[in-house]
Length: 140
Image (tube, rainbow, N blue to C red; front, side):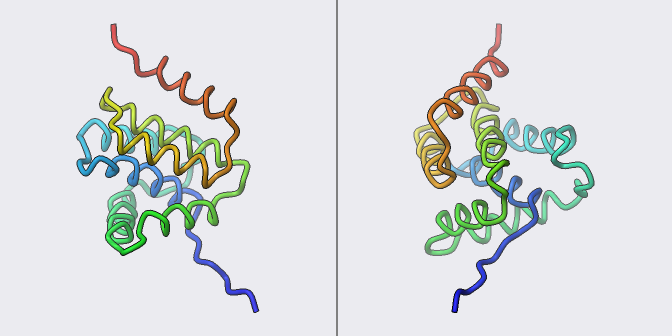
């Protein structure tokens, strides 16, 4: 008998992706946290999501990350909670959070690799998302 794996809402899964990315280098910068807040406020995928819940969802994510296999648990939860058509959205949000402080650390690059592998994203999609983020986050 197959057991049902846990899932969360689409919006919660996307917040998990962003929080996990922000925490990847062991420090959640103000720029990253502000980026998460702005993303939740403006993107259509978050319509109807109570922005007051961001802190609670972020805390739940942080608690899960503390578990023995917390990162794998989060990646499984995200993959199981999102329809495949939103996998590229999840990756794009992760890239935007990583780029928010204009410095992408080695741990963040590793998490991006794990995320694109878990979500089976093709190289062309990944390259387009990463290039678009570079363009959006450039400074003069």
